[in-house]
Length: 417
Image (tube, rainbow, N blue to C red; front, side):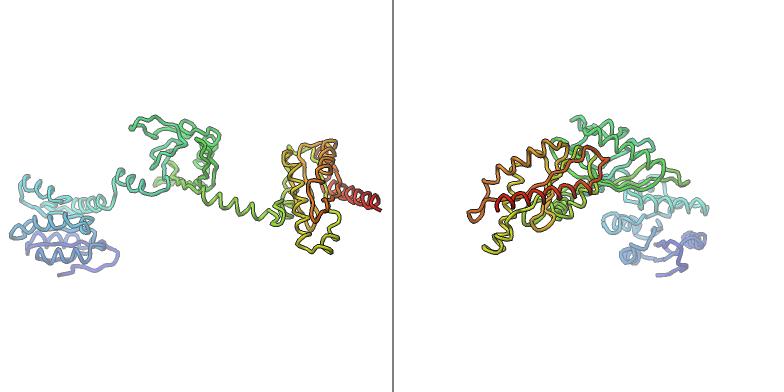
């Protein structure tokens, strides 16, 4: 096997030729464009292709090879899967049209015929390489459909060009010929709120060219899903934005696990109420519609006595059943119940006036007899303070609730004595 040139930055082309003057002339003509490897027999040519198919850009085969070797070569190239990616061009200077059509039917990508014009030959070889290197749009779409993710393309107006999957939260006819092409999210999505957000996000991306990645919650057909959407702009050779390419992954399982882990991180393991971390988060992010907001400060009575006489396991149970009392009475009021330490609790009652909060505390006292440990009923001191609106200072309100709770604790102690 002969190597005509060895410059590294050139594409490598294999020439399978008889010792013809025309084939040699072709090598010299294109020597500054391609690295040529030359073989003179069918066996050498096929061996070279098998060995170097990943590094070969094209094969030129001489139609003047003896014993119909050109036809045999084409058949071998077209029937072996590994070799099909390498385009084959036939050097055919004098063949008739029927012979040329036969070469095409056997897998030839094109012909090179005399007289040889350098630019014309270069274009033919380049086109053959490009065709083999490029999958057709249907082929590409078929490959992408094999992936679990939904990949879609939109034009510069936010209209779909194609999508690999039609997911259940879009509205479309049962007609198998229905296509998403030319439609916007607003036209096809069942969840119109999410559809409008998606459309607005597309318009922003088309305007600023910034990639985006976010997770949305979708609840269509009573199926809760979380979808991660990643989008990027498509640009032309002038760097102008011509559309959007995007990827949708169903991350429901991961998102639910994340939420569960977050929920567990905010729960007190002893009582199942919210812990101090959640309490601190809650007071930093009070909802605007929570007012009037009533705050109940609660503290167990007799815990030291329970711990001293029955042990700390009994003391823990005392704290647990106190939490059970809160849930029994306050759950219907959407109370935010927090154990902030030891036997200390803070309960937030959104949209609850002070008279209603005091009535709930009265219910807590009356229902305490339902909960007991070691034949001793639960006893809890309470203090209430209400914020009518956000002009009040939350910290001061919590302090006032604590102050009122300690006053209640003193009252209970005095009554017992």
